[in-house]
Image (tube, rainbow, N blue to C red; front, top):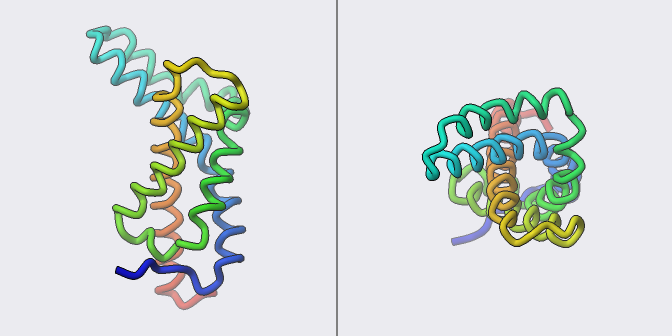
Amino acid sequence: MKLETSAFPILDTIKSICYFAVLGPPLGVLGFSLYFAGYSALRGDLSGIQNSAAIPLMAFVIWFLPYVFGIVPAAACGLICGPFRPAFRSWSACVVAGAVGGLLSALWNEWQFGRPHEERLLFFVSGFIAGFLCARLFAVRASARDRSGAP
């Protein structure tokens, strides 16, 4: 199995860094919300599930907060995943990009902000969702551009 790389790896890397850094943190808020909904469901707390639905709305009001915790891991994920843009047409490659995003998010937030060990899973899930969705959206956008013949 040959790993597909881009014809223009430097250009695609720059594009993916910008794309992941802009879209990653807001998409990570969805992972944050899903984590709290799942955690509340496992505990049987229905009010926690209802409150987790409001997390994306609160992040919309306080728009800069996701970027405080997520812009560096998102940009690093874009840096790693950029040259492999053609491979993201498969779902398994997007899962790998999500795993890279999750690991970077968990490690960055532990190193930079000194988060307790219990929050590693929270940041991994939010980074995984953001990395997976960014990679998929980046691949869909790129494949549409490839079909149209635009550079």
